[in-house]
Length: 352
Picture 1 (cartoon, rainbow, N blue to C red):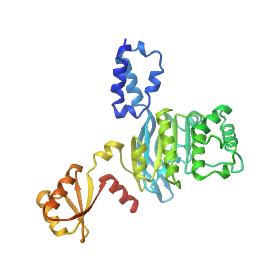
Picture 2: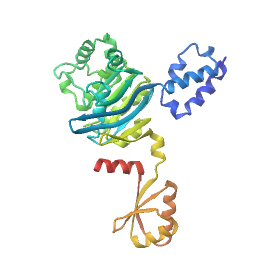
Picture 3: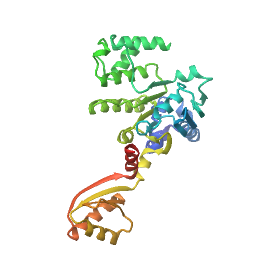
Picture 4: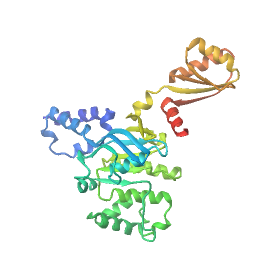
């Protein structure tokens, strides 16, 4: 019997990043049979949830004639993930998502959702997915409420009026449900699109570039909705974006794709924190600065623009040390800018 051990057990679970991403603790706490489980059984239950694959993509390729849009891409999305699908425009993100949803046929490779092949389980899989690809579409001359009613009817989903109002309130459009969508701002339409996406209470939500064209406040609103879906409603989310900072804030795991190829994937915090920093230092005497740094840190300098800036690859803790060396030797330091190696690499992909 584990009743007396549950508080300590849950505290331990919450300290694990891999478990925290799942948002499954509320589910466990609502389970009235927990007190009858042994710690061994509960551990097995937790492990099962942590390793349940919602999406399995293996060696996916898609060719349009001689154009290779996606080439040999593989990744898994686990229950409770906010999975960031990151890449510059034209990298193959939308093509991959369309293939996942069977909107286009892959040239090769395999895709499973909820452990099942799409073609033979289409109705089951679609009932568990909500998605927005590029942008949501609505009848501009109808109200937000009426649009959701029509969407529910077309989808064959039995949705009550109270459920529609609940979703409208969830996305922050309460009081505007009777207004025509044509009068909505772009940000309001994106939020209504999320309401449409979660109307049938799907397990998996796929959002393709949801922040495109939004102002900072609109982007913040969408970001908060995504976090609410993960933290309060225990949804698994796939979020495509070309903005690294957006994925860093929201996602628990990510895949970077460029030119249709998988570049790197893994836990977001680990990928970002383990990267060395690219540090740009502006000084008044670059020749002397190079001599000082090379005398203390071999191979730290990776670039010199020939004017007053030096680029170094160093650890975060080394930055104040380098600054001290320079100032003690009468080299004036005008600015220090830092960039993670991964961020620098991603920006090169985007620029190219």
